[in-house]
Length: 450
Image (cartoon, rainbow, N blue to C red; front, side, top):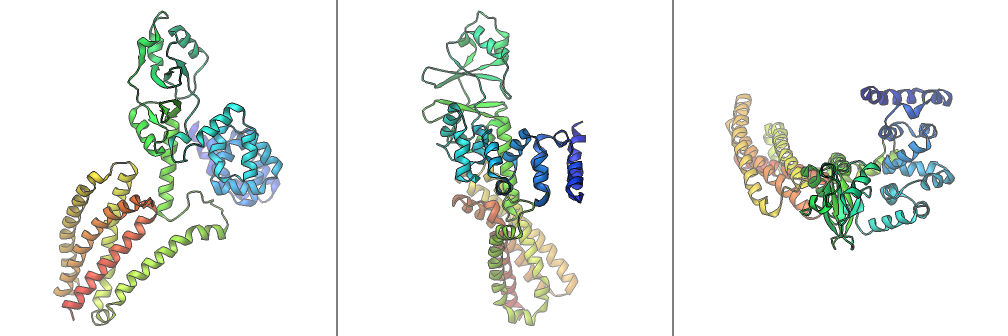
């Protein structure tokens, strides 16, 4: 059944786009709320051109509109706010809970954000204010408040009654607190169900608690939770006070969003860019890194220009230059990918960076020796020129060693300077390998072939 529903999304997108008028569009969208999973409606909205989005939106139930409004990308949400009348926006915002308001707060115009906060009840306003004490990259901003907190002095019988009332998703433990609200232990629901009603709750309370700190980085906290094998972990503030829990659902959502950001950043894109964003906006989003790439390309061209006389006299050097650039780029990107992943997972620190650099240099040296010999032999068999073959082999060796060093050092420095290495690492690494590779190749060519 699930596979059938999932397969309907691309078909529905095609039918919406092919609809020639609003009557056909409304016919396609009949019973829209039953066609997809809740998570797919945001994808549908983002996948159709702007002129048809409002019709799709109007065919959603109010509940689905609230879900889509929170789930769609920032640019798509901003565009929707501009399209919808203020009255519809206010009606929509009045029904959001504080979690949803937190999710979209940074892109809401002030008048809409203030309106949404105003319509939260007092308890949710307090939770919203609590979240505002933390950055969006910190765990405390995103804690889940759908948990069961009990007094450490509660009897087993009373704790069991709470189970009968129903439990929220990802609930496998109750959290015990003292009078001050400090976390004192956890009670496994499985253990609770096995003990008799006359038992004392403290007998099954685990006081050796694995917990998370509200100031922790969100992604690192997600890694901790996933590795713990738990469905959720309690979260405490600087004073040890229990403020909520972090669930496995939120953890995987944080990891997914980080992966999406890294994937788009690697191409110099904004992860929130709308598929049908205006040409002006899309061009603006992408122009920065095109400009940076242009600068680095001119830098590499400048190195080549230093040896224009050499190239005029030894044309074969120009023919073989792409080999130098390609080998350095591929080798460097392999190391870069490894290091960026290690940094993202928290595996790389100052303590192991030197050892890692030495290891990658050895890999670069090994591959450099092997491939410089192979490429040198191929070049000699192709052009029957021993001098060119030796120069190319040395250039390949030097460039692969440079690529290995750059693949470690560049992302490590960018990460230290709080610059996303997934976004800018590839551009800087390619420039380094091109410049060094061309300089060695053409420099040796000038010395020994003219």
